[in-house]
Image 1 (cartoon, rainbow, N blue to C red):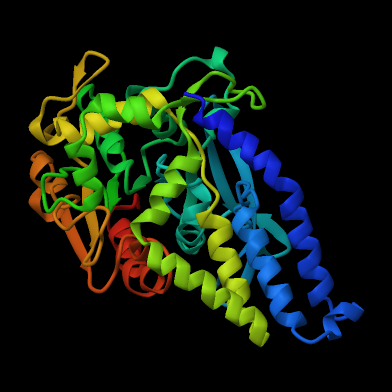
Image 2: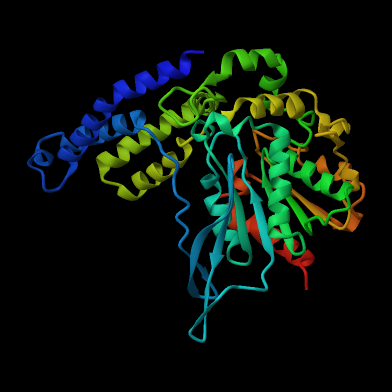
Length: 416
């Protein structure tokens, strides 16, 4: 249980070396420095920057969405906090249009709630998803809080609480013209939330769009799924759960630390990350600043991770990956059985990547067989050829192949 404390000690010990590496990189690389004219200065500068970036802390990035392009015009975007919960903020990206000199919202566009994953990275990983959606929609997103920043007196956060948060967010926005997009991990609690609301007779969103999620991990299991099933639950608690050190507001909260998650991410494709860092070094030496800056942007996001509440993490492993309670129809949330068959009047679309090595093909598509109350003509599925996990919601394929179909699907079921 001292691992987190040792990690923080090592991080503090490394800080002076990181500052030193950053300073040296600037001294040997700055055009106005006499050191930059020395033989081999570009290699020294590149090496020091690589050392700095490997050892530095990566804070949560900003969404940084300040405007969008629509109909050949640039429109300002303002990020607003709609609702604040201990473990999550509901954000809205509000667009404005210049209407004969007056600032007016795009009032007739449908609303979209993007449920971001609580699985290591921050919600800013979906920046491209949000910015693209803003062309035609009012966009809200769940911005999950790093558990180490939540004081212990706020209580625990369970998988059932996650479901309750999504229900509350749907009610806050209003289901009348709402479309919910869930990306990866939250496909399961999102389906549970909408199922429970439908079972109670509450209004549900007009459509659900699910990207690469573990609805039924018995379908085409991946290495990620294998890890969850080949280890008993006590192993995860004994090896991956640690107490937050005293230098954070969440002191003594039990979490699955972000640094352990990051190590797992890197271990999945070590050769690719090594090659990427080597290419970054070569780009700096050659003066290819555009490619070097692209590397910085990617790893500023990829290396920024958050701690997950231990109880939520362990329950997700148990409910979703080990016992498969949702597809078996055996999941009970706060005394209510989750029944996707109760959903009606809500269209459903599932999206999978052909090369997804996190959620295998068929795992998300399994949602259709569960939602028996939805008319057959209101089911849609898309498999994106050549796309991996991230390619279905971020990047060129998302913008040019996936988004047009998502936009048209939402428009089909939007309130007139």
